[in-house]
Amino acid sequence: MILDICLSPALYPFYKKENDTVIVVDIFRACTTICAAFANGASAIIPVADIEEAKQYKLRGYPVGAERNTRKCDFADFGNSPFDYTQEKVKGKEIVFTTTNGTNAIEQSRGCKTLLIGAFSNIDALAKKCIEIGGRIVVVCAGWNNRINMEDTLFGGAFAEKLFNENPLKLDSDAVKIALELWQSAKHNLLNYLKDSEHYQRLIDNKAEGDAPFCLQQNTVNLVPYYDKVNKKLKIY
Image 1 (cartoon, rainbow, N blue to C red):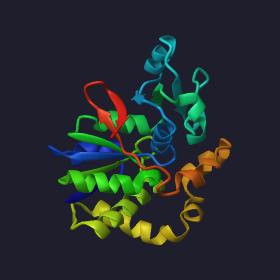
Image 2: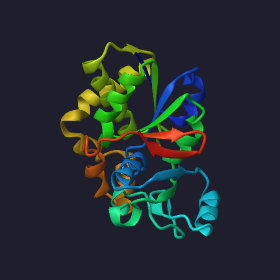
Image 3: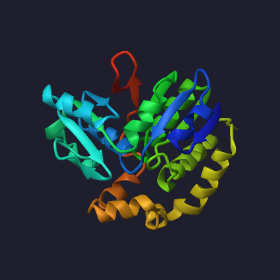
Image 4: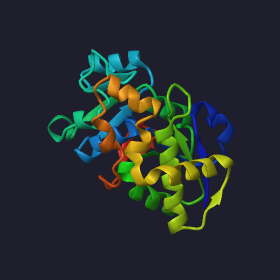
């Protein structure tokens, strides 16, 4: 198995190779929220990068989750907090979803062979699925407006460590080594390590810092969302 980490969606064209499995990661908060919505019974999630497209879905009667710059959009049913997507609200429903960074990363990388959604909340299930798939795996960090961020990079290091413990692994670039070293520095108190990060401060500024501890918990769900290219929807295996 080969692992690489792309630290920003803007860099993905330089990492892209044929037959890759891509894992899109947005820890604060889109990918954690996607996993939470599926865990609470959502039947599918329709990721869209554009606000106007999300509004059109809303007019057609779809429940819509929409966030920009950490805040829920005024037309939306949900924001980007995993706590918004309760079983009572999402079970059996298809949810349209657009966020500042996560859905853009999905848009940028959905042409790959297989696209998976990763978070700390499903890290073991994700590792198991990637070992099953094999080949070359690329973690695409959603970052912040195409800039590198700490929390997604740290996930990349945690995931690399997880794969190292389970399977022979070849590293395909220095980015994996950078992420691994950062993870070794942070893993014993991840929340405290991230309290000086840009995105944690945004959560505080928007009264959403309560989401952070949940987003950093490992293995709160046992599922792996994937992108169905034919229907342009996220589903779960």
